[in-house]
Image (cartoon, rainbow, N blue to C red; front, top):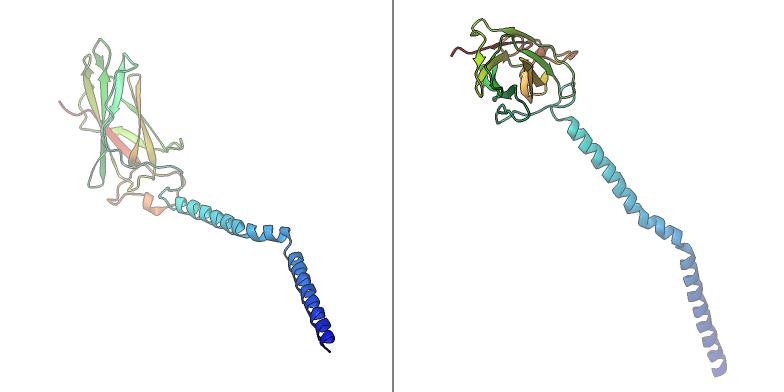
Length: 225
């Protein structure tokens, strides 16, 4: 009887060992390396989707910046650009700061004589206005009735051309670039001009400013001495 019990115990232990070995083999076959790799790669996939979504959000956020129908715009310039004789022995152009008052905008243009002889500004200045993208903006410039006669500028002296126009109300609307040419010299400035309308922009608000005036007309004058 004792021998029979011993044999049964030994057989039970052998069966238990075989069962454990089978479990281990089955567990190993159920988790192959390829599955482990795919499982580990899942978070990367999620992160990639998150990054893509974040990129789309950033792009969407950027498009919500004030930009109007034409790309590019600038903020108000806070310092003047003085005329400089560096690189020229004729005339040089400088720009003051755009001033605002009751819907109007004012800008002083400095004309500096860098030559050794007096220069008379006998011909009127000409103006070109465009967006930062180089799209031309139509603005009608006319001499102000209060303009003084054409000044004569001595060597190392300067004269001022005063510009004025009605604001269109938005930095990104109309022109952000102004170029002034006079007596063979040209100067260019980028600024929040609020001058002119965007071509083809179907927005009734651009037909006139808050005071009912047309922002596509501007005037210039020589101030009285």
